[in-house]
Image (cartoon, rainbow, N blue to C red; front, side):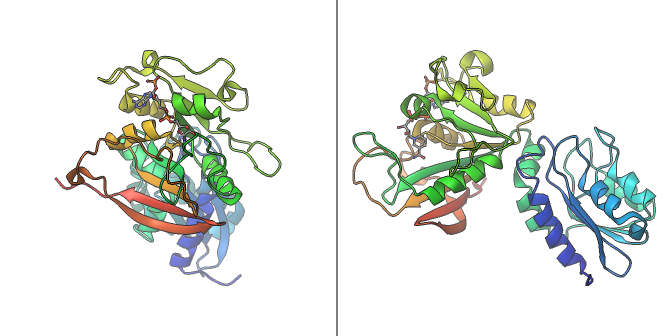
Length: 353
Ligand SMILES: NC(=O)c1ccc[n+]([C@@H]2O[C@H](COP(=O)([O-])OP(=O)(O)OC[C@H]3O[C@@H](n4cnc5c(N)ncnc54)[C@H](OP(=O)(O)O)[C@@H]3O)[C@@H](O)[C@H]2O)c1
């Protein structure tokens, strides 16, 4: 095999890490590429599930003796502690790795310090290689670990004029099958999907991640969370079927905000305690408005169909904005055509001061 530069190896490691999205929580996604002293790829791996081997261990097992004197290119600083598996730093040192190239430093107070341990053992360590891409690939875990509550993605579907249903309440299907397939992929990449009880009462959606063509369920299902202050979710609601775990989060469970509804910050902290690092907020308009008003949305993914309704409910209800000075500003980070629709991805602009 041709030799790789450390930059090429890091790009490959970032792509490998992405294969673990949706299955590693509460652990990060991590990819690792091992090069021998000549720069030839001799091993690679990714962290596939919590409790399973770390990316470095998978790659070292592949490389065997060929790792000696080589370079480990890892998206996240190798861990320094013994959890369900041993510390990766020790495994790299024992394998005789001469150089470690890191994308992003580990912010986890329990596991960090890997770079220092490696240096103390005489291993050359270089950090910050393709750091922005490595960070973007692991954004939910990194953000939630740094601040202590999950990363929240608000997803909605709307017509070109921003409506989520017609005036008579019919809403099937605003966006195309291609967009709905895309949403199911998104569900498969997060730890929890969340709706307000209003959406359960109106749509009775199953909220599972599945193959839309044949209906088969994805092997791993995100936790379904219904935000339901006073337990109005019907006993026969589809979210209560056994297809995935479900939490009907009430005021009695997490506490009330001053308006008597579920306290959203307390809800996110409770989810973090349960090992949830990413949440796909699927609406509806009122719950999404409350999350945006509270500054609790990290990313917006909007599927917009080339259709207009001219009347009917908007995709978003009150988000605490009554005048232009209070507008919630976002920045587009991606615009992609999905079938006949457009998928917009935007992140809130940091507020000054
Ligand atoms: N286009 C889309 O992407 C999309 C997505 C989802 C839904 N929808 C549509 O949205 C419609 C339902 O709208 P909706 O606004 O009633 O649904 P919703 O946002 O899912 O549910 C709102 C309800 O959530 C509960 N809730 C609990 N804590 C809350 C808090 N802190 N802040 C706000 N709400 C809280 C409230 O009921 P309690 O006070 O009883 O707890 C509230 O009435 C349906 O027609 C559905 O089809 C559209």
